[in-house]
Image (tube, rainbow, N blue to C red):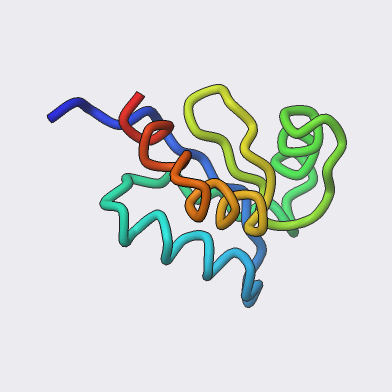
Length: 88
């Protein structure tokens, strides 16, 4: 089995979309680095820079690829494109 790429997800507390994205990734067996960025200006700035200014939560990165938010992650999964990204 190949190692999964590093997955980083920028979240904020009590965010239902963050919870859904984390749950899906956990179900896939992914190791996720969760970064609570909502109340930390430096981490929020990092998220905005990495996501080309997207300010909604979550923002998800698989390796260096910006996947987007929860809706984009779910769409990738429905299209059968998430598993190949996770095993890249």
